[in-house]
Length: 114
Length: 112
Image (cartoon, rainbow over all chains, first blue to last red; front, side, top):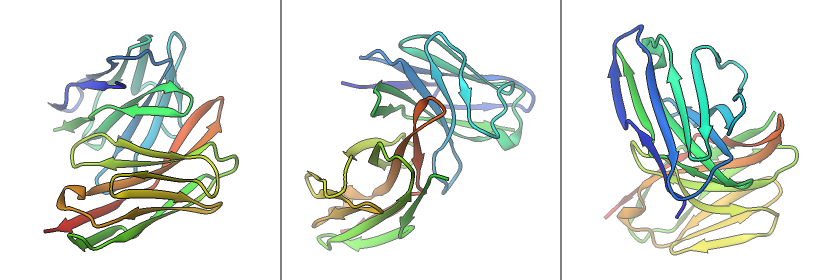
């Protein structure tokens, strides 16, 4: 149990385009989902916390207009990177909270912006 | 500010050579300390949660312990398949929600 999926697993796009990443909790309902970014040899950095049916809460320094998060249901959250640039290339990982102290992570999405 | 520091950054062991990884933390209001395993190009895989000083948890060759300032992940008689990056994270209640703050990880390589 407690499986989280992400789609796509990798994506390559041109600079200036937008990319959508989906995060799904497959066998449980997640009231809270989290989006992280991980650069090579760096720790996971929390970007935003989203609760179903409400606006996401962004961490300091994360542009909410650039990283659009939608948490439309208890099993689906999406992250859209708008007008992506090469510096947005990173490994994006979502996690879903089953209870307040349980977070289960997706397999990650490798974004490369050319 | 919440902070998590893991050491060493990288560790090479021979198969069967036991060792420990360290995670030191500063956080006000610790809600839990987590250990994850991360394989290259994958998301973190949950290993343990520890809540209070003195607590210990075991799973196969891994044992996690917690004090008021740090946690250790002990690896007994490791095998090559234990090679991975081990992440430590502390959970704190900030801004109305539970959040995890991660360390940079320890990359473990176990040679056969």
